[in-house]
Length: 78
Image (tube, rainbow, N blue to C red; front, top):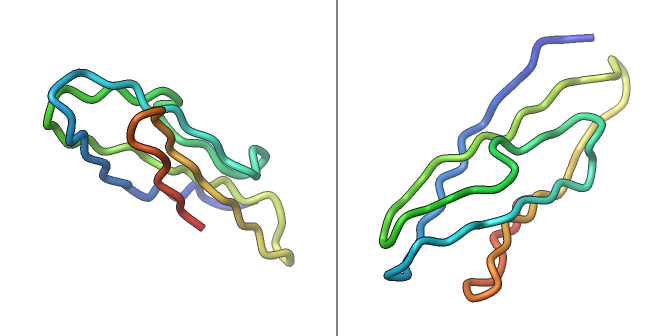
């Protein structure tokens, strides 16, 4: 259909230990978060990528993205 588009999302680990943040997208047909599981060192910041691959010329395609950690809660992107 069209070209892939990637957007960088920066997330921070405010904890003094390594963490693994999981990702979820509501529209898995057109969107993916890479990597799916994000490893972040203590007090570090990392960048993940949200990739969009269009599948329609006429319809708006959207998603909700959630990056979650049990202690830190969720980062929500609409």
